[in-house]
Length: 455
Image (cartoon, rainbow, N blue to C red):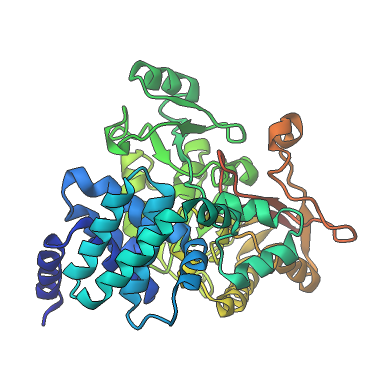
């Protein structure tokens, strides 16, 4: 069957399912290795407007707490379940009981109905019985649920090794929903003036603590309906990701490369704050580069000094070298799990070493494209030392003409509430670069390291 016809059939089938059955089908696809970004938008599009928010919450929330939910369900089972959808239905039902305001009777009955709609009638009695039992034992189950780190065991083990003092704190923050943060387009206006605009619209918002361009939205809003969206007044970007432009320094009149640039948030920010002679943004994913073009056009940043190229940063050869390079490297994305909770299921232990090897290849190749006296800023959204401090220590060891440039954030020292943002270095192990941890009311986990080419 042609893919378009299959998609129409799937959508028709999807339309006849209740909300829990739709959630179970989406979660099963993630369980089988599908990225949530590839399936959730279309599913929400084909969901009635009144249910879109709840479908998103059920899917994201169940994934966010997957391993904590699983730890409560498994002891209730006398034998393993044959069909993954029954297992997923139990996790989904328990999530509703523990983390939503949906009445228990409604959560259970709708989940049982979903099992029937998915032609799993024989399992409906089991799902009903276990969820009813959970509702009776809610106090003890909730205590164990809240105490769980809610991460795959292999990942929590790595966090304990890398950050023994902060691992529990990191894990709990990764269970929370991430805040919604804007980045003001400084070419179009100031952060203070836009905060006044938002106040006039009765939108609760405030200035970010670390980013000079960041605004945290403290209520649920439709981004495209905010004032100035279509005029390019702002973008959506995590606060810690916004620090890239700050750490890159003054790029005016310089040749700049943004490697692995899609979807273009950092590219746009560099152009908002600087007037480089040339900025080249490359990425090996042509479809994702469409987003770069769209963002630059909306923000009115596209021009002859900006080139967007489909290319592999590990092999691409430019006509001339660059004064500054931003390498937002492919990584395990362990610092952004709260925004992409499917990472908990999709990421595997073997992925770490493969990613580390790719990062090393990118570093070695891009270093050859950097002019003497130029700088390279290495960035990941990971919190694993193999991809960050250890990666950069290895690069410095094998690269004689690379010198570490210290990165500091004065605001970390000025604001006591931010003291747990940067992990303490382990005694005897000097900190290379700057590691920021995910914060409940702040940015995601990000790592930054700046290097100077000396010869």
